[in-house]
Image 1 (tube, one colour):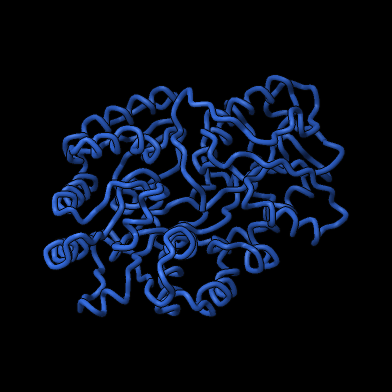
Image 2 (cartoon, rainbow, N blue to C red):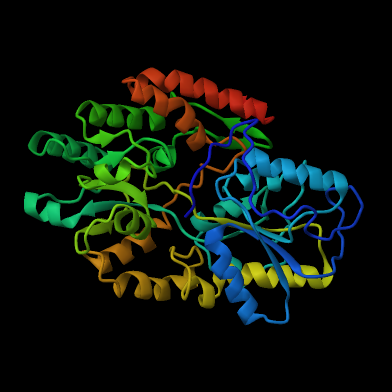
Length: 438
């Protein structure tokens, strides 16, 4: 789980506590030169990952770690700029990084930056095979494994079991059923909501699992952007219908207004981390009300979306003992139960840790209305994420925040703003050097 930030060209946000020149690479300016480093392992993480670093230090006391905390809301251009400077100077790269946004993997693994190490033959196959294909797909770029996934953020259907029971409703299984129930709720219980479509992950939540080609890779540095596809317009029509019925809110997921909306939120698609971070901690919905079930799907298209789930990358500029230590680190934080089960608050992407994590955080929890159903939905959803929506240097979800949300706040429909959204996606893709087919 992570917060989102628009990945827009020219956006520069401050990095916190970054030590200039951390990492002790050689003075060779080439981005791809392998260098042997001396000294502690240089690790960059956001604040929520500090506990993982400390767990590693406890497990491997002989491996010294220099931890630098970075702002988890920095735009991907700001971080990329840092790495471009490192490439010019021949030093400064972290040995391991938890990327602030998942889209960072696109530039970090590019030939222009050349930061991420090829892990294909470095990470044991037993670990690679422990990930569901959909969970590890984001880390496979150009046929190479370039990162390891931290947590799963697949979308399930969250709903208020207390209200469903009182009102005699059955949870929908498909998007058309979701729309029909939303209209029924609008008529029978005005003032209640079935979704949130303001800023933060909205495109991922609704359009990723619909197969909408907003940034579909079709070749080397070539993307397909076609918002006129039926896989896009069917969701536009559904959301416009629910917008007109006033049962979806245009507030942002993390906005100050979302808590008030959540008090009357009957159901919503949402990531596996919503239970702990949104319903419980942010929105303070009482225990015993919230549960989740299997993801909503379109007939003939059995996929869901994904909202986050962080990525760990390792430097290509190290070798020998430093490379071995870095490998131990990323394997520990992504797969070892001492971190992923004992400490991590989010559902592990690494499959062998799932059952123990679910037992600790879901089945033994006193929060969910139906813990067994929640656990089953999590395990099912991670297998259903559509892999046709990659992470690219332009972010459809971030551009949604800057293009679509203001239009909705002005009272426009999605259909009215859709051509502008298409145009902006194409413009940003081209600015980042992609060839675009529409």
